[in-house]
Length: 391
Image (tube, rainbow, N blue to C red; front, side, top):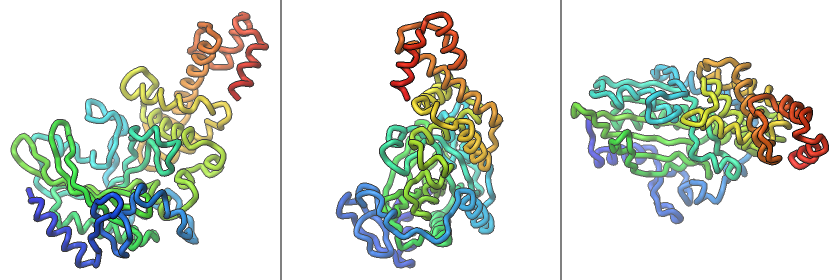
């Protein structure tokens, strides 16, 4: 199935015209967008100057992450979408180390020699790990290294079907209290590198007062070795961002929780614990390469605050949260043990470095310190100096 750019544009423009959306050019970034309320810019973070959504009055009822997930399941399954189980978080011999998008449920069709010609559609709640923005977690609210990519995926969708799915998403937003009058849909055409193949997409970024809630992609030239061409309608949101946009709470992590921790701990540490829990719960062990190196680096972000956190309770909370979306093969207790053992290893290595010693580091930190003090490698007074400087 192949449709030309002009055919897609014609269907798209007709879709918005019939629903009284205006097409405008943003005076700041000069890119085009659709708006219903004649909004003055494209609604992106840069052009909005931050997150004006936080100045909008909050709804009377606070939307929990789990409740939003259940609303999604019910809304789209009653409209004919089969609920597809998420793919495994850890990817073996794949183009990504971790699951990074809900569209990967169709990887067999995308990367197979010949596509299945019959259209398929499903709804997916896919936990994903994306580490590209790890450096922004500390400085920009709304960024996390893991989240639930909540999406509708339609294989071999026509352009009309794609925009019908988008219309359903807009209804879903309205039902949550996120009214479409506040949305800007920003136009973009992108060439994507899929394992050496260039796949073009017509993209609409769904912006809400500074926050990019999600993206509606129509990939329309997925070419296989047989010469067959397929399309993919891929419309998805970050569940956590959607909850934040609806609640308009002070911080993004409010909707992720736990509330007893988000108000007192740094979001870098909370994000690292949540992502590390997903990695370790999926069977990753700390190592110097591949997924293991990513887990080791993630746990490294926790060490500075590790001794001031109730790590066990946080891992317990996030493990339970993740298992409401995906089956984790590793138990909560073993997940905690993996993370805590690596924290101890890191603390011991750091102590070795600071003191210029070379004690065995593959042991608990308390045991490491006691043995070093007993052997007079670390004078007890020196230990007090170290701890004062690091607490």
